[in-house]
Length: 58
Image (spheres, rainbow, N blue to C red):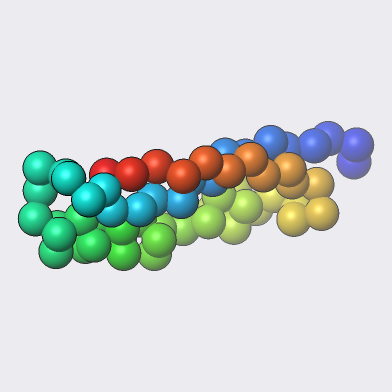
């Protein structure tokens, strides 16, 4: 019970000069936000998780 889990979390934002139409960027961002949480999917206790985050533009 002394194990710590390190997870990465991305915040995805649309880029102003993306090669794709804005609606496709927004659709991808919406679908990625609805994906399953890693702690729920792997049944990891939330009191032993350390999350690191980054912002990514698409």
